[in-house]
Image (cartoon, rainbow, N blue to C red; front, side):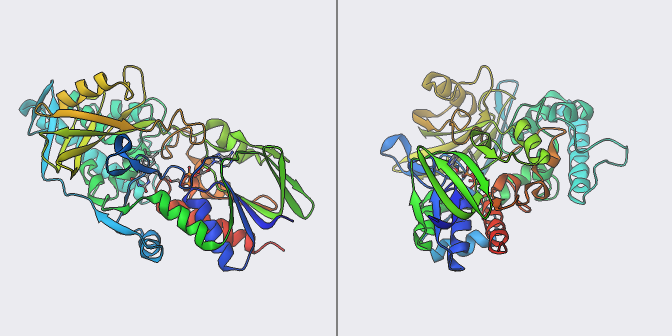
Length: 424
Ligand SMILES: Cc1cc2nc3c(=O)[nH]c(=O)nc-3n(C[C@H](O)[C@H](O)[C@H](O)COP(=O)(O)OP(=O)(O)OC[C@H]3O[C@@H](n4cnc5c(N)ncnc54)[C@H](O)[C@@H]3O)c2cc1C
């Protein structure tokens, strides 16, 4: 045996699994496709020489206690998010201080109240509201149609969608948006309240230190292509090498796993979930600009960069984090396109540069944070991702709690480690 347990993937889920297994005295080997740890947690210098910014996941919430405990344990710090001090809306191409025109206020408030009620019902575990309207299995577009709200209200919800459901309106489940509204009192505006801190110098460093501190052997730059269960052990193939261990944890998300061939093949529930995949397709970018007061939050007109927050000031420039959907007409790699977007949202801004990471095109991510496709929500249930033989599964994508968040990755990694520890 090369190890007691092989962990495939050095994201936060893999790191948490390695940490837990090592504490139990297991010999662990972690195999990672990239040349770094952290997966979708990825901080690097803006533009190569600017401040360290998170290009993947960034914020943790006040209730994410596992992460809050890990941060000081590994010598990292928390950086509180700058509060929202200036809230602006883009409406009919003009930036203003309200989301809708005076004539639309009643219809707007009716839609806000419906969303708030539906999100609270969903939080209680109900799948229909009192009008027998479905809260699950329905796409965001269908849900918005049902609301029948003014265009500017729809645009407002669309902006918050880029930081919650974050995928094709026609495909991703509206419940992703409702669940995020439910963090607070059912209002979309409440979502940002709980993005309370970022980990400094970065979430990837936390994953790296967790693995190093566990004493696990780490192999980088080596994508796993096959996992074979034999009697009493598992063989994991990466490149030309076969690694042998008593058990294996696949610490990969829904869109990453199809890169691996399993023998025997996985159960029907898992196979169906992998075939559907998840629909997380937002882009996140950072704009370095002058003339933008920190703390300004602007939501857009339903196109391009739909959500922009002036997150910090470093070296005299403001760093704006922006979100939109990877869809036709949007090109976050094009500086001219980004400048045009910034000019709409921040007319006084002088854009100096921008930077981003394309998670959708990244072959070891194939998407952003998890977003269930309407009708395929059950495939992402933790119940569907129980161990099979000597293989356990860990990812934020299908964590039993706080799925989609870093904390979910830690919970899922620890759960998978516990499952493996029970194997004889
Ligand atoms: C743009 C963006 C913004 C986000 N914002 C937030 C946020 O603010 N707060 C928050 O909590 N979460 C956020 N998230 C989500 C968070 O980043 C993820 O939930 C979390 O990082 C997932 O961890 P994981 O370990 O489950 O998966 P991953 O981090 O994806 O780890 C999987 C690992 O497996 C590796 N891998 C893939 N294929 C193979 C293979 N064949 N062989 C070996 N290794 C392989 C990958 O390289 C990766 O390192 C965001 C994500 C993105 C992309």
